[in-house]
Amino acid sequence: MEDAVPQETRTASRARLYDAFAASGKALASGKRLELLDVLAQGERTVDALAKAAGLNLTTASAHLQILKQAGFVTTRREGVRVHYRLADDDVARLFALLRKVAEAHQPAVPPARDAYLGEGGPAALSPGELRARVAAGEAVVLDVRPDAEYRAGHIPGAVSIPLAELADRIGELPEDLEVVVYCRGAYCVLAYDAVRLLADRGRRAVRLHDGMLEWRLSDLPVDAPAAT
Picture 1: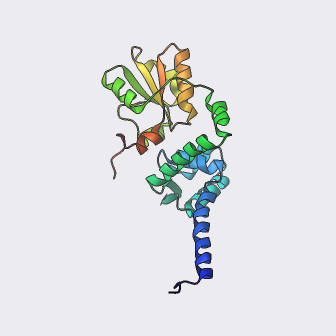
Picture 2: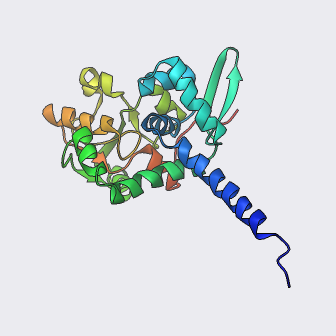
Picture 3: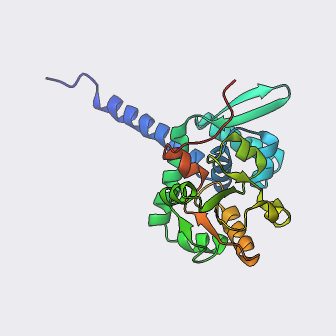
């Protein structure tokens, strides 16, 4: 019985399929676009806010965001003259988290770059289970050092919000008799590392959550977030 589809047609169709897969990979082939996905994993943001967070001008940020949108990784909504971006779905956040994990495991350049950015070794860290146990026992307070907008978009239940830039001036708001467990965006977010170092320099007991809000959400752990309207 002859093949219903000619071999040349099948070969061309296969090429188009893999080219379509490759288009998604191409959209991820930029460090700045990955930074934008990292910020968007925390919640919806305007183009202005994304440009500022990634250290880009508006024109360049918009161009990167259009590439991500064309690949289906982000969606938009308009509010007056403002355009808001968000991840298309949780599977985009999972892909981003998996990409980082695979790169760290197999790309020799990642560990030294990670250590140069975060600091070699780094402060002690707790698992989510250890964090919840210490909070339940009344031994720890949870500190979110992300920007306020990210905290309001969703945070670990009971967490106190003090953005890193304000921590030195507001350290007195944290109880002195409890260990401080600090978290930020994710496993590669430097804010928590810097906060732990600052707290330790001020004589406070502080540790870092091993991962961050991205991994917490992807593990289906409870999140305090605004009610849907």
